[in-house]
Structure formats: structure tokens, C-alpha cells
Amino acid sequence: MLIQAFASSSSGNSYHVSDGQTSLLLEAGLPYRQIQKHMDFQLSSVAGCLITHSHADHSKAAADLMKAAVETYMSEGTAIGIGISRREEAPSGHQILVTNYSIFHRLHIIEPKQMFTVGTFSVLPFETEHDCPGSLGFLLISNVTGERLLFATDTYFLRYRFKGLNFIMVECNYAKDILDANTEAGRLPESLRNRLIKSHFSLEHVKGFLKANDLSGVREIWLLHLSDGNSDAARFKREIQELTGIPVRIADKG
Image 1 (cartoon, rainbow, N blue to C red):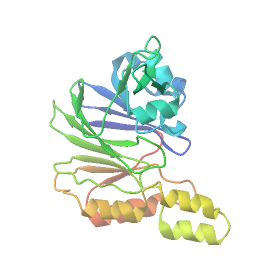
Image 2: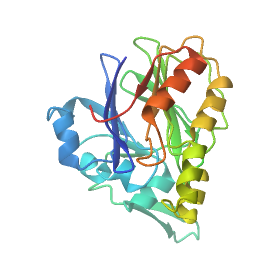
Image 3: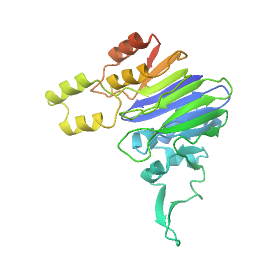
């Protein structure tokens, strides 16, 4: 399986995954033209884009991708958060989801634990714990290679356990000791510290998650969305490799 990181930070997140027959974008948190450039202006080769949640650093180009005929998958909460859907009361008195499908007919609303297919990939969405409605992670299964990839970002907790994984792409935003030191030194407001703890995955939580899962078939671990000031890429890579014995990559541009 080919994995590419186009961007992975609070400024923007976007990744490309391919099993040799189907290409998928994971996240659309860069300007549309940048995503085009990263894909060598071959967006017609992309079977779909999966979006975890509505924050702009993950969804910025979602509307533009749909207008460019890229099938785009997200939860109802994400569609509402992005502003392309809304809830209205129907004549029956029931609430319905309203979307302008003349513009956004490439939008696919997905539900947690309801598997769907994009090209040669089967995708299982699952709930994550972030500070916006409808945030999701994804388990991708290639029906060509049989490989399984877990993608989870912007969450402070993962409630599920996974078997048979071959690739893990997981947020490792901060280390608690670095976060606390920055707060004590006045470099980080207490309010931002508290938000990070309640919405992002720490080095300590990543270690706990990895210990709780079957890693016997995992060939590569990608650490995503490292904080600019509250992380240490070399340390994170070293500690996760020492813990797991598995090669670790730090996601960055390219």
C-alpha cells in the first residue's frame, strides 16, 4: 500500500493512500490548488475523499473537491459543520437534513460502524472523541491486497480495538511533560492546554492504544499531526519504535 503525507499539522492535513487500483484522499485540509498540485493535477484518478471532521485544517477544500467531481464522504455533523448541509423541520414535523445536491451531489453522508465501499477499498468509520460533532476515524481494507490501514486523528481517546492491522496512521499531537512545561513557562495559555488534553491524542495515549491492540501484522506506524510547540518528533519516533519494534514515520510534507 502506498501512503503519502501532503501535510500534517494544525495548518492543514491531507494524505493520499493507494492499493495500486484505487486512490483515496484522507482529509482535505489544504487549499484546493495545493491538493491538485500534490496529485500532479490528476484528481480524476481519485476515487474518493474521506473527511474526519469539520475543522478547517481537515476540511478546507471539501466543497471544492466535490465541485471537481470527487466523491466525498463525511458524517452528517461534519457536513453541517462545514456549512454544506443544515437541519430543517419538514411539514411532518420531523427534522430532515437539507443539502443543495445540484452543487454538492458528490456528498455521501456516512454513519459510524456502517461499512461502505470506495473502489477496491472497504471503509469502516468509527467514532472518535474530539470537540466537534460527528468526528470519525476510518479502518480501510483493500480488497486487492488484503491490507488493513487504521486512520485516527484529532481524538483524545479511542474506544475500539483492532485486529489484523498492517498500517497505522495515528495522531501523536503532544507529550504531557512538554505541554506542562510550556504552560508553566507561560508559553501556552492554560485554556489551550486544557483544550488539547480534551481533544487530541498525546504520546502517552498513543502508547496505551498501541499496547492494547494486536500489532503482530503491523509493518509501519505513521505519527500524525504533531504540535509545533508541544512535541518532539525525534523523541516520539524513538519511543514508539522502542515500544513496538515497528518502523515509525513522522508525517510531514511529502
